[in-house]
Each structure stands twice: as structure tokens, then as C-alpha cells.
Length: 314
Image (cartoon, rainbow, N blue to C red; front, side):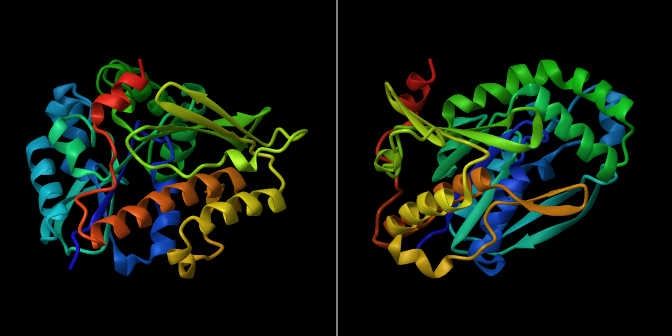
């Protein structure tokens, strides 16, 4: 049996990691995906961090060595006993037995912090929304789902800022795909998507989809990367056309098609974002093509190393 294909989704707190990955998990099926949160590898619970004056963004406040060992087990197709961090109350629950599956989605804060961790992933994604939008998302989430007041979230954001700058944001230089959602006009629920596609993976060519007189999708070629911009207000029919073009490039996976892509929750209500759906279908493309490469005996789907991605970010 081929080894699992591992997708990494890294970003600061409340950048949309779970929103991105949930659609992929639904599409591929929970029976086919091992879903790992690297926040589970925190060394300290919430009260201990408060007493020590540390944030969970600092590598020293995480079991980075155990995280790397577990990702190696995951990549080798072996089971692991994973710790569990409970975000709702900041405590730890009993560990969870995780079996090997065809795919693994690994999301969290520090997934690309070391070379060992970076090499464990087949596809590396980094989420980088504007800081103002991220703060809004974090306040909305933590004050409704994690038991914080708005004042506590603001204070926590300020406390975390030095570690975000030092440890979290630099990881974008090691990503194959950098996704930046930006509010369309003044509506934070309608977001444009800016997708930076770096050398290192064989990305689908979207240039034939550009049409004169339309500004719903734009592509800018740069040295070592391409930047794709998709309007959050793109017409649903036009979005389906772009989705179809990506699906055509992975015809061997068309049986996976459902309407689950692009779904997000706000205020307890499910909504659909066409720009989110297009980001997710691009990530799905890389997952299934990497799976095909591995199944045919290839080591991975990469064409270049980290050096290319790092150089393109300078």
C-alpha cells in the first residue's frame, strides 16, 4: 500500500485553517484522512502558560520533537498515539490512537518551523489574511466558542504579537501555496482570494481562463511564482467554469465531486464562498496528483526543494 500523502496547512491563530481543511476532509471522506492538529503538541495547558508567561506560538512551549516523530510515523504509514489539546477550556484530554490512511491533513501553528517538519509534508500551504481581518475572525471565534471575553482576546493578541512575528509569519517562505483572503469592499463575509503558487509543485495552468473584459480572475507571473487573484464576488456560473477546468486536470478523481467545497460557518449559519471553493479545489488537485505520483512509485510530487520557495519569497 502506498504511503499516505500529507498536506500541511499552517498559519497564525484564526487564519481559517479549519475552514480550509474541513471541506477537503468532507470531500475525500473521513475514512480516508488522518486529521492532525499540531496544537495538540503544546507542552502547557492554558493556566500553566499564563503562570509561565509564555504563548503557544513559541516553539519552546511545544513538544516539537514529538511532533516531528509523529509526522515521520504518519508518513511511514504507521499508527501513532497523539496527544489531545482541548481548545474550549485549554486543558488536555486522553491521547487518541490515529491509524494510517491514504491522506493526512496536518494543520497548526508551527508545522514548517524545522527542516524535519517541512520535509514530512508533500504539499505545504500557508494562510496569511490581513492582520485586521485575522483579529476580527479571532475575536468572533474565541468570544463565542472558547470562553474568552473580547477584552481578553485583544489582550491575548497583543501578547502573542512578538511570537507571531518571530515564529509564525516567517514560515510562509517555506510554503508551496500562500493563500491570502481579503475582504471584498467592506464586507468581511465576502472575501477575495489571492493565491501565490510557487515553484516546487506542478501547479495547474489557469491562464486559459483569463478573458478580456473580465476582472473576476487575474494572474500575475513573477520570478519563481504565479499570483492568482479571484474575486469574492465572482459569478457562480463563472466559478463553476474555473472549477470544472481544474477538475478536468484531475479527471481520475472526478468521482470525488460534491457540493461541499466553499462552505463556511458564520453566526451559526452555513454559507458558501466561491473564492474559498476555488482555493479548496486547487489544494485537492495537489493532493490527488501527489497521491497518483506516490502510487506509481514516486517519492513525492515535488520538482524542486525549499531553496526555490525561499528564493521566490525574497
